[in-house]
Length: 480
Image (cartoon, rainbow, N blue to C red; front, side):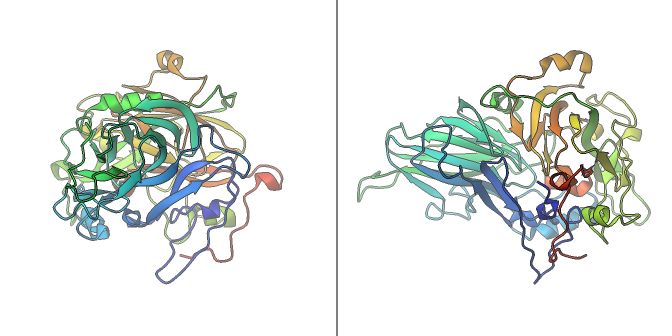
C-alpha cells in the first residue's frame, strides 16, 4: 500500500536492476497473511529467479484451523535445457511460438520420472503417520497451468493467494502461474511412499505443450524397515491434459470463509477482452506464425508496449510527457462474437501502444474479463493484478451476457484473489476498490503472452492526504 516503488515489474514501476547493481525493496505488510512469492519481472528471468514469501500470523494470533505439525513450501517450476532467454529471443526473431519446456520441477528438482534425474535428487517430505501437514503450493511455471495431486491422500484447501478460504476437500488442484494454494494433508494411509505429482493443464486446442510429469515424494517415517528394498512410490490419478471439468470444479470450490461485505456501489464498469492475435508480416521480417504472420496478444485490441527511457511510475510521478497515453479503452473498440469459430482475420490485428486506464482514488471497479477465440487460439488465461486483491464474483463459458450472467454472481462469499483464471472461451468478473495509488500492471501470467502484449496498466490517482498518496521514490531506485 502506497509503496508501488517496491512492486518490481521492469519499466512499469522501476527500471531493471542492471548486472552488478542492487535495489532494496521496502514495503509494509498490510492485511495479508499466507503464501505469496517473489520473482524476477524482467524478460523471462523469472524462469529461475523466484522464491516463496510466507506471511505468518501476527504474534499472539493463530491460523483459523488446527496448527499443523509442519509446513512445507511446494514450488512448481518449468525448466528448459537451454538458456530461457535464448528461447525467448528466437521466438521474438521468428514471430513463432517459443519452444516448449523440457521439464517441470518441484522445489527445483524434476523428480525421478525423468531420465536426467534420480530418486536421490527428488524432493522428499518425511512424515509421521497420523500427523497433519500444511503444504504451501506456489505455481511458478512460465507458460502452462498445472494439475496437481497426491497419491492416496486428500487435500483440504484452506487459503489461496494469501487469503483464507472456506475449507473444502479435493483430490486434485488446478493452479495457474502466479497462484498459490495452501492445503492441509493428513497422513492417514498405510505407511509408505507417495508421489506428489504435477503436469500440464493444456486448455488450448492443437498446441504443443510439455507433457511430462514432475514429482516429489511423501515418505512415512520408518518405511521401509532398515535394510529393506525401497519400493517405487504410488502415483496419483491426474486428469487428462485437456479436461476442463476438474479445473472448473476446483475454481468453483474456492470461497471466502464467511459472508463478505462487498464494496458498492460500482462506479467503474469495465469490459476487457483478453486473447491472442496475429500481426501481418512486414517486409524483411521473419514470420513463423500461422499463415505467414507473427503472434501477438492484446487486451481490448491493445497490444501493450513497455516504455524504455522511464518506467511508467516514474513518468507519472515526474509528469514526464510522451511516455504513455491515458486512452486505454473501457470497452472493446469493436464488439463481436468473442468466443465464436472462424473470427474474421480483420479482428485479429491488435494495435500496439503504451496506453493506461486512469482510476480515481476510492472508485469501486467491476471488471469483466472476456476470453476470445481469435485465431482459434482460445485458452485459459491466469490474469494477475499487481497492487490489489479482488473479489471473484463469477466465472463462466461463452460470451458474457449482463442480462443473464449477473444472476450467477456470488455476492455472499466470493473468494479474494490476486490471480484469476479466465476460462477457455469464457469470462470472469472481479471487483475491487481503487484505494492504492500508483501504477499497477495487469497481465496474463503466462509469460509468452506478456511478451506478446497481453497486459495493461491501471493508473490509480492520488487521493487526499498523506494516507491516500503514494510515497516518493527511494534514492536507490534503478535508472534506465
